[in-house]
Length: 319
Image 1 (tube, rainbow, N blue to C red):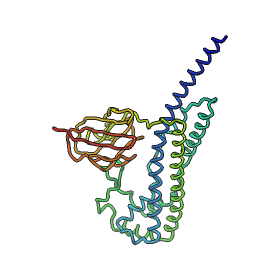
Image 2: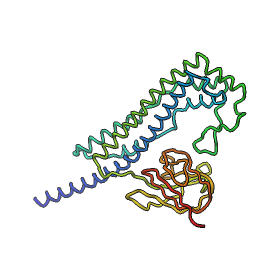
Image 3: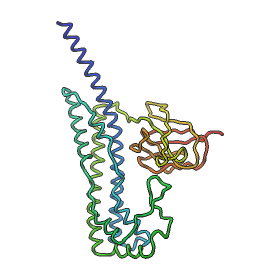
């Protein structure tokens, strides 16, 4: 009987050890994707704050804006952030806890509450703003096709003609439109508060994960580089060129590659869900959904990238 009891105890211990290992593996994925959530929510907060300041300027001093900039300014206010789908939702649903482990159970509860909050909430939008602009037949700004982020192209001074400019000038000074702007301002403030709250929630959850699992690290898989300096972006069917993980502890990825004059970005799993960019060369700190990294000179490069910090470096090699 004693032998059977000890065998059962050993089996339970092994099962608990396996379950704990799987639980921590999922926590590590969540620790990474929630960090990505934080950056996305912070980006939204910056956008909403800048939009609020812009609306205040339009209401208090519309003459501050050159007339030729007004169409771009109004369409900027329509923008409510880049579409974002959190990968944390997927990983959270794969989080299987031991019902006999109180710490696991409580942590899972907090994580699922966080997922519910970020998955259900939608930013407030006032559709009257875009309708008012469209009602005076102001076209959406031309996009800069040289930039994958789709920045407005303001180089064509004829895109908005004199009639467009006059109509927008009159619109922003009308009583009805000013009332719309005041409502939109309220929505932007609500959205600013919500994006800040979601950012704080992410920080709090990651701190809870760290408290449970002090050794947790950021987890990145299949890091690669893509851009016009290689084979192009997705619009021409290009794929990321894989990089090699050379230091697992510090999460350093490296690659030797010939680059043409052009632009590149780093990303994971050949997807834009996790991507980094900046406007600095030959080194800098990439930001989530940042601009394309310029490559001003063709040649063979040794490329180093650290996704945890965003640090990157392009070291030109001897020909």
